[in-house]
Length: 273
Length: 198
Image 1 (cartoon, rainbow over the protein chains, first blue to last red):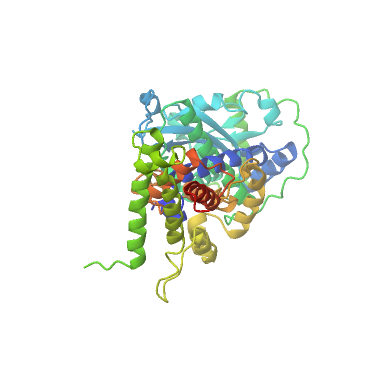
Image 2 (image 1 turned 45 degrees about the horizontal axis):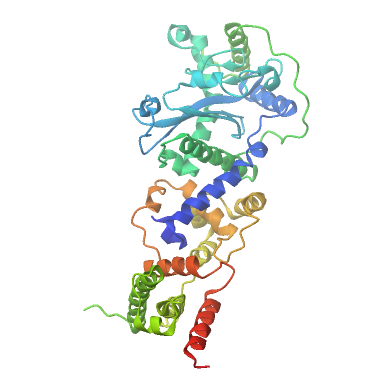
């Protein structure tokens, strides 16, 4: 379908309109893609604790590749991802209510989730983004730290208790997969970005495009346009962050969360012996 | 046999005349062609073809604007904002297929984006409305495979000759703030005055 004919304007005007529009949407980013305040994080953690048994979980993090239709002109091999296509990478943190709270852009498809995680805005200064015992849920590809909890993999996951922990973690972490599907379903241009990338300016334009879609997703969520149940009350106050997160290693942290989850599942009858 | 209306024939003739006069006026302005009458009347600074071009352009503009007003009873006249009118009249579930959000969210988004979309210095009559910009942007972001389609296979509603004529006139003799009808009037007055009719 030709947009220019649909709207009765010239093709150049379509391009100019889109640039003007995306530029305007980019200015809404600071209002709609924001890290939750300490009060809001406490509410999210309480929701995860009462519903799934995860103490201090404020959201889930996952990476997503946005495929490109055309091969980039400069260094195309850096855009070649594990799905055998050219793409750009985005790392997204979602809260339990399917709101996007952080987006990390600027990496090509060849970059892995663990690499991009190190450059996320919440990663270098976790004390400003996480309170005591707070963490995110990630998948196997993430770099597991005190603030990013992941499943057991390989031979570690052979015991029954760890398998059940992985199952429960996947139930809560699936929110991020839902957000990806909703994002690509609603903003279908992300299925395959038809933008020629020939220089840095084009690359930044593609990043702005992806960011605009994320902003729209949050705008639609804030207006209740998406059939999302509201079980967590809205953010009310902006308390300052607590001083320091837990001073323990990633394994100890995951062990502690696992004990909490298994205790919760045994108490609620979800644990299968 | 294809049936062509008289109006279509008139538009075609007018387009051809505009194309020819554009070329002629360009040649005269660059000094490649000097007609005898111009030399005799000493009107080198205002080529006669420019006057004819302005007049023909005005006629073509009128023909194009009124081309849908002389159709049959069942024909719905289309305007520039026809697509917007159709979109606004769509039922809610079809509207969502186009704009990817419901009308309430769209209105909220328009409120949010209005201060950022507005361009302070842009006051021309051809500037697109904010509603149009928002709809085009949402449509392009919300649909798969629509970026390349803006470049290929697109036939604009404005004839190329008309565009070329507009560019030519605006470059040579028309400040943007002055309408084409006034330019035509000035040229006509100048020509008639030079010929000594008045």
